[in-house]
Amino acid sequence: MTRSEHLRNLLALGVLGLVLALLPPALNVYLRSFALFTMMYVVLALSWNIISGFTGYTSFGHVIFYGIGAYACAILVADHGWHWLPTLLVAAGVAAAVGVALGYPVLRLKGPYFAIAMLGAAEGVRVVATVWDGLTHGGLGISLPSVENSIATYYAMLGLMLITILVAYAVGHSRFGIRLNAIREDEVAAEALGINATAYKLAAFALSAVFPAVAGGIQAYKVLYIDPPSVFFVQITIAMALMSMLGGKGTVIGPIVGAVLLYTAQELTWVNFPTAHLIAYGLFIVIVARFMPRGLVGFAIDRGWARKGMVH
Image (cartoon, rainbow, N blue to C red):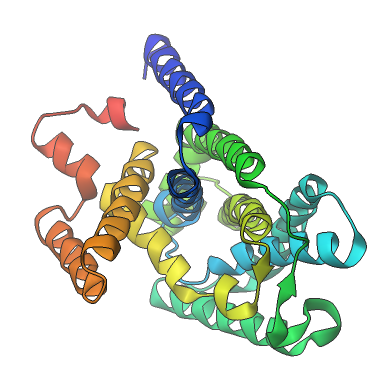
């Protein structure tokens, strides 16, 4: 990709950030919340894509980090009187440490074994959060002080989304990203070429853990109440994966497009088909998987509507 294309993409991101920054006064509470949740899922899809799209290790347990971030924020705010913004840094640090500690054993597994191990880890963390009354308040959950925070959390999520996009873009266009792609395509060959696969996988896993944790912290402060079933809900991980695959995993723009379209479709089907929205949601996914196996980005490239360099 040429320098002018990089500048064009960064300019487009800047324009997007400016437009979204000017929106809140013109939005009602529902639309502001809708925009916040959409941005949150963009963050989650891009984060999942770092380890599962770029590196090829499909994770079914990434909700672990989202839940850790939510609990870090809730515990520090409700039990220790912290301002909510510094708790996001703590959430990021704890998630990165857990990512390294968890990633070292599970990243030795491959394919479905890694996916199942992550799913089991997510369930294990949920159980720990449920029974550890002294820290997490157990099944009762944690209530945060009631405040009007829709504007503050909107801008926090906007900032996080822009940072996540920039980091994903940097990874996708760096030597680090190229080596992750090499591991995805053939890990044995990558190691034979001198790539330290373990170190790169751990770095990607820890990096992919940071952004969901911060998103979880912002979300906890937004809704002002969390409990284990809500923040360690496996469907959150499934949404990350589906959104990334819908748009085109292994790219930067793909998870963004997938998150926006799939979350919008989910909301529309919920509003218009409240008793059958899951069926409509599932049919939409099946249609895309059947006719666009490489996602919307791959479909656009195959049809000649976009060049590979334009969407990566």
